Amino acid sequence: MASEAMRLTPGDALIVLDVQRDFCAGGALEVSGADKIVSVVNELIEEAVAAGVPIVASRDWHPIGHASFRDCGGPWPAHCVQGSAGAQFHPDLRLPERAIIVSKGESLERDQLSALNGTGLAERLRRLGVRRLLIVGLALDVCVLETALDAVSEGFETHVRLSGARAITPEGGRDAVEKMRKAGVFVEDG
Ligand code: VGL
Ligand code: ZN
Image (cartoon, rainbow, N blue to C red; front, top):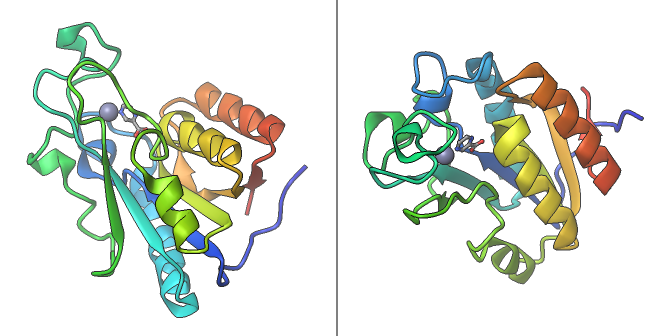
């Protein structure tokens, strides 16, 4: 069933996952249509600023030689290497000064796909009085999926807005939507 688009109000937080150059057009791990989400995400950032709710932006932030890179036996081309141009946020993304930046994937030996796994973010948000999350970003079938599933486990009412997300593969995207809905995520089609 389709969920309606929520409006951000106090008690909510906006979570923007990995809107970085390497996942966008011309990047090392380009996600098709990624650039199209930037205006949607910017509008949500404005809504979050107006509502006075926390804005979190995660970034994939790998050391050179990360275990998830093909050269090291992992599934992905090298991407989002710490300090590289590809690891920068999309140049059109308008993050406010007070956005909470969360880095993930920093450990050489293992990947960290969820922004809520081992980052302390869930606890930090709870301390800010957050109970409900609106999640957007890249990629729907990887980081968005894993973060949304963790968010439900952490007890947050969890929404994912599809217009603000893109998948690496169409099948992966469909699969992710099904898994998230089964887990109790409100997947917003609008
Ligand atoms: C991601 C692939 C590899 C993601 C991170 O953030 O979705 N995907 N590393
Ligand atoms: Zn990665």
